Length: 88
Image 1 (cartoon, rainbow, N blue to C red):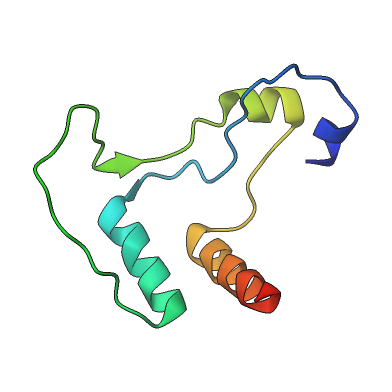
Image 2 (cartoon, helix red, strand yellow):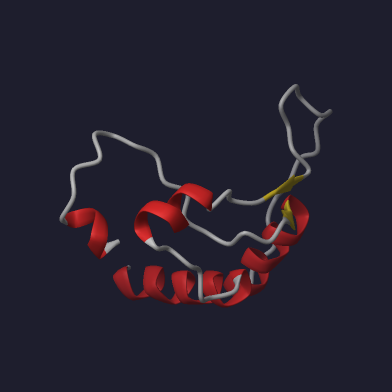
């Protein structure tokens, strides 16, 4: 992120995150676990464009920014929840 502060990118998009696929249900379960609360979910039929698994394509971020994720999703969610709670 510090590299971005010193360069002009004219509204370019950079994906930041992990490059390992994760199912949406698994992501929700990690957030539920971190919060100690169950999500209220409503299942609907798939919509055009819905993806059952998601991951960030980091090709551009690695090349331009030298980005390389060092924290797994589980730890990242835990840290984010801790940070968010500290701001409340």
